[in-house]
Image (cartoon, rainbow, N blue to C red):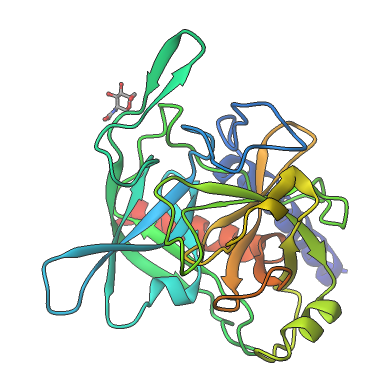
Length: 310
Ligand SMILES: *[C@@H]1O[C@H](CO)[C@@H](O)[C@H](O)[C@H]1NC(C)=O
């Protein structure tokens, strides 16, 4: 009897923990704002503050002072950015900080005409990374659980509209299916065009992992598990077929987003694996965020507890 009571108590505590702390931790009122409104089609060149959770990763080159920006991450909480293992441990370069609130990577001040006025973004925020926390089951099976949490030394200022966390799919309110309107946004481009100076966004379409494995087989072999899913570029949407060198190169760690029924953007996936110089129609592999949200929640909760006591 006492066992059953204890079991029920633990069970209820777990439910309470999952529901309420997750809402407080991740899905605050300010998460995932959709400033531009459209749901179905969006322009390929993203607009100022359209994706205020995009993070550029700043690396110090081995044995040098120079900083290099490669790959991406996504702000999910004022003090946490998610990315992939490959991006977090790129060659011998040290991942040192994240740059939040950037847009055009080659200008100091980013502005955009809005109706009758001009909108300018505040300077980007560079924040040091305190700790790189890798998913304990990374690479089991190969390339699975490709998720890293970057714990920031100090929280980002999320009071302006230019730096905001995205929402995390925790409940089943974000149905990931073949009808889902999925958007990837990233500074990316083909080998020929080079990485774009402004984030691009593309509609992507979910495909089954069996079809994906088949299409990837000539390039790589992946035994998919629950921590992954695949998408291909949706060539029917916003006439992307007209663009010749369509490629997501450079987008490792970038967010795949979906608008929830509450009108907010949710982080559905993270770019994990792609084929270099892939022909159009080659699938990309994504981290399945909803499947790993529990780990994110528990890790952020325990790290924030530690921070309180040190
Ligand atoms: C945070 O950003 C807002 C808006 O850009 C600014 O007014 C405020 O001073 C900033 N706060 C801190 C602590 O830097």
